[in-house]
Structure formats: C-alpha cells, structure tokens
Length: 561
Image (cartoon, rainbow, N blue to C red; front, side, top):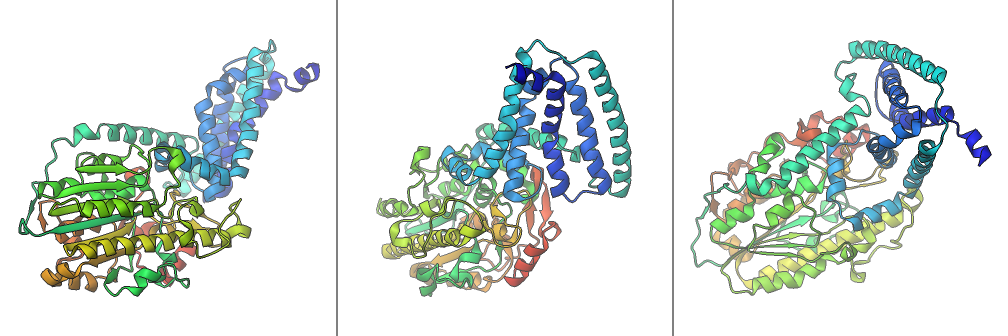
C-alpha cells in the first residue's frame, strides 16, 4: 500500500487523468483530415481546458469522476474509430445506441472485443485510482497548481494561435464547434432533442389527415405487400450481377422487375425505414414529426392493414407507424428471441390472406441480413460454408461473406414464398421489396464493417428493390407494369416506396406525388439527397466519398445524382 501511495501521488494522477482525457483528441488528429495548424489547436485548446478543470480541486480524482459523461463519450468515440476508422460520433450514432436492442448490441460487442477491452483497460483503472484520489488525504500542492495554471494559459495562447492560422486557411473545417469534445457533445445534444421530439410524436401527429380515398371498385379483391429488407446490399444479389447465385428463385422468375440504381437516403434503420413509409424525405425530414404513415392512408381508403415485424420494439418512428395498423404483430418480444428466422412470417401472411377481407395492405419488417449473419437463416438456406467466425478480420472474411450471402439466399426464398402465396389467392396483388440500407464487409483496404458510419460508403447506400404484380393486376392495369419496367434503370431513392404503393393501390391523396411513383408517366425523381449529420440534406454527389467508393459506384453503374 505504501508503494501504491508513492506511485500514485496527486501530481502523477493529475498528469494521468489529463493524458486519458486527451486520448480521443490524439487519435482524431491521426484519423481526421484536418489542417496541420488545426491539429495543434485540437490538442492545445482542449488540453488547456482539461488542465483548468483538474486544477479546480486539490484532489484531481474528484474532477475526473465528475466528468463521467465525457469519459463515456470518449470510450464510444474510441470504439467507433476502431470500427469505422474515422469520424466524430454522429447524432445518429447516439440514436442507434438508444434504438438498438440489447441482443444486437451484445452480438456486436462480442466481435469488437479488442476495442472494448482496450477502452476498459484505459478507463476502468483510471476510475479506480480516481476513487483512491477522492479518499486519500494527499492533495495537490499550491506550487503544482500554480504551475498547472500557467501551463494552461500557455497552452491556451498556443492553441489560439494555431486556431487563428487554421481558421484563416480553412474556415469551413477549422471552427470551434469542430473541436472534440465540443462537436461530440453538440451531436449528443441534438440526438437528445430529436429523441424527445420523437416521444411527442403521438401528440404532434394526432390531427394529421391524408383525406385518402380509393379509385377502385369496392368489391375488387386487392392485396398489396411491402417487405422492408434489413441490411441487404445490392452488390451481393445475383439478381444484380453478383457472381454467386444468391437469388436463384427470383432469377428464375420472369415476372419480377428489379431496379438497378436505387440508393437509400440514410444508412441507419431508425430513419431509413420511416422514410419509406411517409411523405417526409431528406429535404424536409422535420415533417415526419407531424405525419402519419401510408398505413393510415390505406385505412382511410377502406383497406384492412397489418404490420408484421421480426424485430424488437425500439421506440422509433417505425414503432409509431406500426401502431396505426388494424393488426400489429411483433414476432420478437425479448432480446433473447432475436434468432427467429424471417420465414416465420410466411404462415402469418398466409393466415392474413385467408381472413376474409376484400382489401389488404400488409407490411413486413424483416431481420434480413443484420449482423450476426449466421443467425439469420435456417439450415436449408446454408449454401455457402464455412459460415461461422469468432473475430471480424481479413482472415475470417470469406466465412463472413459466406454467412452474409446465406442471408440473401434466405431472403430470396422468403420473397418467392410470399409471391407464391399472393399468386395463389387469384387477387389483384402487388409486392414491393426494398432494403433499408446496405452493409460494409471489409470490402477493401479500409476494412470498413457494418453500417451507420458517419460517412457512408457505396456498399451501405446501394440497395436492392424489386416489384411484382399478379397476373390479375397486370390484366387490369397493364400500363402500371409497363411503366415500372421502363423505369428499371432510372436512378431513384427509397422515398418512391410511399408514393408508388399509393399509386399501385389506386389511392388518391394530396400527399401522393406521381413524380415519385414508379407506375406513373410523370415519374421524375430528380436529384437524390443523403440525410446527413443533424438531419441536413446533402446532395449525393457532394458527399465526400473515398476514392474506393467512387470507384465502386462507377463499376456498378450507379449515378451519383
């Protein structure tokens, strides 16, 4: 104990705590494309501030413990740098933490063991010795505190000089609000504000009215199905030219229309899915707080509506929209049930198709290709092996790809099965499938993995989209199928789902925009936007993609517009 006391003097703890708080800044100086002078400010200004904070008490452990929110953000920032390689914690990443169920979180953390262990080794011992500092009778000496204050003033002066020079060189990047941890806290504040606004959704949307009506005969049997894919990227569908036959059933069908150039406006589920279901878009995302979904529009037009989900409740707009349906069913109600396969949705759809109603809208929210991949498909869909991995790295990449491709095989079987059920009814029917976003799979030297990164990639944005019409629908509305087929290579994004389904269902409302309907002569989607940080719309061509992504867009014939 005596040696411990001699080793961890208040002065040494002061220096240790300062170093730990600066670790994220040091890493970010290497990972972010910042002007050299701004990198100096990136260390000196926060370092001076931390010095002054630690100097507020004679026991530095008191201040260090009181800064737990800063340490939490620092820990998350370091894990995200390990995962994505760069970028500040985005507001959407905070929201992802709130909306991701514990089962998914543990699956991911298990594969991020090196980063998690490293963060724990950095912060846990520091917190322990901070408690020791708090209980110790030893304190910082007055001369030491005076020297620390002088050093803080010198660092402030040096940091200000670096900042002034950097701001003159690049005022867009070298801004005070772009310094860590200011930027991270601002993003956290925005995330909290967005979360609070979402919680008031039922109140802010209660008076919304589509004033929707059907143009079809009341006795015409109709059923329309929207299947929301999860984390499925077009690059791994053989329907889109992938070398492996991951979609054998869909490829064998001649009644499928697949759309080649479809991008998601956001690479995170809690926003991408709601944007499929309502009129809001990346240009005016704030409208989502007062709008209801297409479920309500179909209900007003006389349809029985159902929402079936193989995901857990997460408190996002997807849950709010699901509540609008006449029948809502979540197959998964507890985190430990997240291994239920999507094919469990088939008997539920079959039951709904035989419930005796004339007109139906059915929405399915699948688990699709969400990590952990090998737990998303049954043995009958396990075509590519080996498919189990213990660690995410280049050495295990082929097994990871095998597992991911098997999830596409499972999706192919599910879609073919639901089409068969719809076909068997003999009703006027249509099915639209669209994935919420894609996924990185260590595709190049950057070794990017997963999705929801602050800076998206080609693999996260290019998603599969298919449309199927029943023979009865094609007979009654042949022009719809012809128009949809004619648009198969037109660039568009996920916002077409809402408007296309309304048009296919023959539903009139002021909120339907036929310039975004795949079955309209007026189809002209225009420029595509990405929903950027703090819900700022960014034209796709203005996203600072890495060269690897621009090359991938070009190789797959995707237009950045």
